[in-house]
Image (cartoon, rainbow, N blue to C red):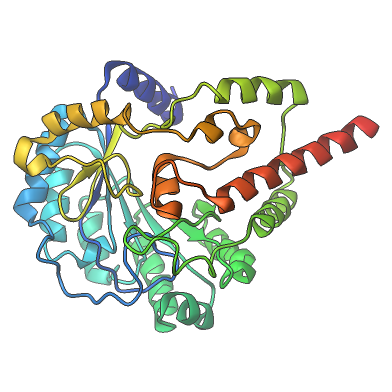
Length: 362
């Protein structure tokens, strides 16, 4: 059985039994970059440790309790996780728990010493976000031109030690012209490459600082078309009959149709257990009541999160990226309105309709 097939079976079985198998651990919200589209760190926040940041002892305790509850996969993230003063102590403890670990990082602090240390106890993968392909892009988007060269050096240093890495990027107005160059960098190192082009509000500042940076719905569709054309893939490999069936099935989905609160949870840098990193409310306190009890309460709370009536009956929902935390970041409320998400869904539907009409005329 392939790893993807095994993971799919684990997800299905865990969901049926209400067992968490994946946990995201946000070791710190601090970062050594100031990316304009970040949903964690507000623009301009300094690097000083927060008083609410958990200690190594607290993170290790949470990790052990999470494993006891069923967790098999950990994501260690931030902010920039390497900034946590006790990262090595935390990581080593998790590594000894016999779980699969993924580390999200910008690569800047992946020094030779850190890479050699990690190689002795390697994670499953280190995912590095590359925000551009030049000093200029990094300066304009992340506040530091030098960080580009530091990130590239970090990638090369980790690869030199035989560590598995994936290069990711998030497409914005500032770096969209760098996309091909970023992809070529990943290809030059023969590592997997992943791209995202959808940006939501900051957990504390909302959409105030990111609206000018994220792609418009039209730009997202244009980007996807070009990307898929270059890869020789179809954008919508689906018939109109299949689409109608999906629309019907989508209308009966709950407000949270993802794995959050079913098989996954997220603990932020202050120790709050949430459904996912986009949530700012509906949380439990595992350091006070334990991971298992928090998980049980989180599962119950999941069913209380509302879905806007207009969303449940919308034919465009099958194309929509809408979910409660995204709506909250966009509008301040789970049942609020997001013109951005609505426009994107409508644009996707129109594009599909045009493509299918073209096909029918051939």
